[in-house]
Amino acid sequence: MKALAPLIALFVLLVSPLGAQTPTTDPNAAQQNSGESDGPRRFWQASVPGGHYMVAIDRISSISVQTYMLDAALVVHEVTVDTSGQALARFYYIEPPSAPGTGVGQVLERGKQVVEQVGKRTGNDSANMVVKKYPETTHAKTVEFRLQSQAELDALYKSLRDTWESGRGRRFTVK
Image (cartoon, rainbow, N blue to C red; front, side, top):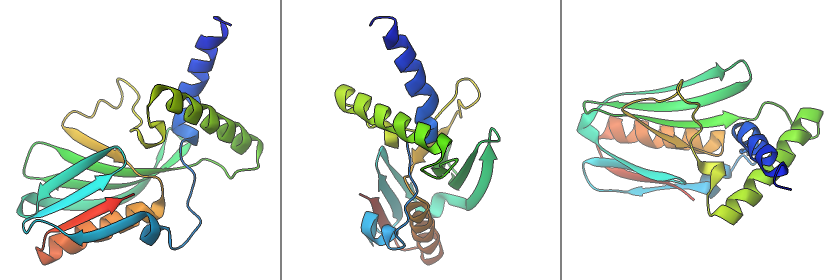
């Protein structure tokens, strides 16, 4: 049994970045999982699983949204907030590599179940944890947040863009 524990840990580490998210197929998911309300006058705030981010609106120098391939295996959708301060904020969603029901999808689904079980036992919410691979992704001066769906990321970008354009403080929340 002791020899099996390191193998399980290795399996969890390998599949958690791949299978920790499932796509949201409900078109109303953004309205169900996220919300927006008035916030402090000069600030935009984001409260998401895994953390909280707050920035003065007049300190935002650019916002961007992009999609890219990571390690020729995963599609990453990302919103970045650049400020006149020292830190860059990244909000991202990792698209699962294949649909459930396929061989790879079944392995990933099983891996996801194992990760969730380990998370429950250890008190960690691994599905919402940022994925990093040391030393390639040390991202000095970068604050990162992982979202669970494309709809949540789209709603976050809309909130951020509308806040920056209007100059009115907003609070964005993902449940």
